[in-house]
Amino acid sequence: MSLLTKEQANRIPDLYAQEDAEDPTVYLHIKCLSSFWLITELDKEKELAFGYCQIIEGCGELGYVSFEEIEALPYPIEILEVNKKLSEVKKELKLWNILTLLSVF
Image: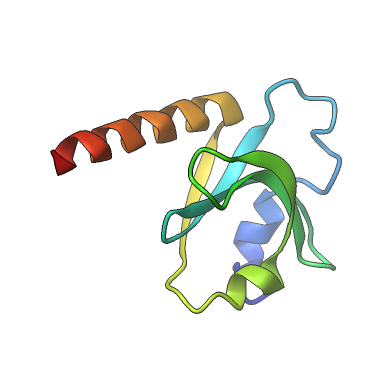
């Protein structure tokens, strides 16, 4: 797995492990420009992840993403390890976006 270290991958639960969780835990926050992926589960063999994805600001949704597709992006990628509930991470990101907008003015 070239996007993650083996240790990072092993910390993420398998696909469907949090399927019934009302508020799943986010293990990775992957950033690329203004897009991000909040990874909650991972199929380690297929390098297919599940989580909250936002490609266009304000248009996020739960879904699957291939690490191969992320690696192919022609822009810098930042990977942050997280261990927080999805609702908490989304609130933090919303606050960060507001503060970023305010700093422009």
